[in-house]
Length: 311
Image (cartoon, rainbow, N blue to C red; front, side, top):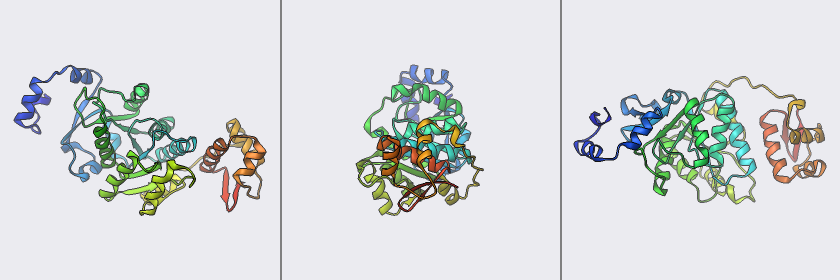
């Protein structure tokens, strides 16, 4: 079947005939199939210079919806992971398919955010479609295959190598209408993904971070170079011309413990995050992360020197 594809050259068919097919057979047993160029999504087809066929597992039709890649560092801060998850949740609610690379940190937070609200998400692998890297994401990849799809441009049985991650990042950009960089240091695969997206004339959005954190130096460099700064997912929705879904708010009584503690010390007049830390006794990193989540939930306002409770 696959060996008879008209997209293969005679030499490629010969190599396939002599290759160990056990990995491919395992992948086919898992439900993997070949996605060929004539059936590519419009976004991928427009990218050009992509392989004529890809391995997929799951429902590849999720790529016919608007697609936004959410990428960033593996060694993400609590703040970065919270932002990635919340952006993924809101974008998913607006019908966007979330694309990422299945890695630790920002990637995993983005996938989980989409999955948590019943959204669609796609993981582009740096291994064969039968692989799972990192290994402790095996169950996450299974969820993604059930609620979206896995994609690989590599032969079944392929192990992860450094250069394959670079190719994986290019494929993430090719599959996406836009790329959101959440947290990227000066040397980061996320920056390469953003560069590939820019070369394809696709929007690059960046979430800013604390200027004292080295994990955001690459992100801030992208902003200086012309990427669009965003601090709320609806800014992406509006820029891409996607109809925004109605946003429901959570009542303070339903909030997790740390968020309730913060809400209780806020009033009509804004107070700084330092004062919030002092009044709640919470860790600085926890307060930073929870303030971001509360703002995205629409429960607090950021104004001038600090934060206030939303009327």
